[in-house]
Amino acid sequence: MKHVAFFGDGEKTFALTIPLIQELERTTGHGVGAIFRRVQAQDFGIQEITEVIRLGLIGRDLQRRLCGLRRHRALRRRRAGQYLR
Image 1 (cartoon, one colour):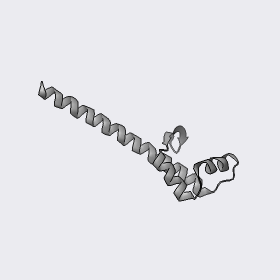
Image 2: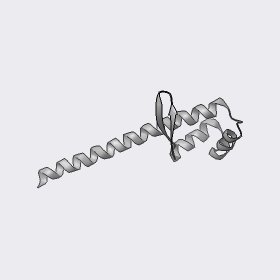
Image 3: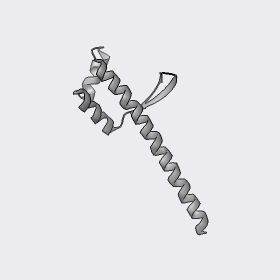
Image 4: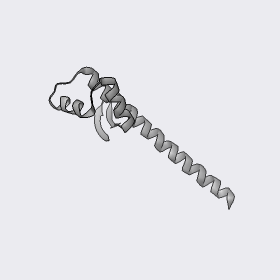
């Protein structure tokens, strides 16, 4: 799940993967659906909001790292293929 929003000094991408959602549920003691309903009803605690933001930013960085790793691997394969011709 991804979301782009203005945060701090500019637009940021927030991403929550399944493992990060599980971590959110563990750290807040609430299921993701309950957190969603509480936010919609404006009946949430600061810990819930800070954890959503923190984990969303972590998810963004993980996705960037994975994309960089995939590009790196593809580049290595391409370079290796040049020498095998």
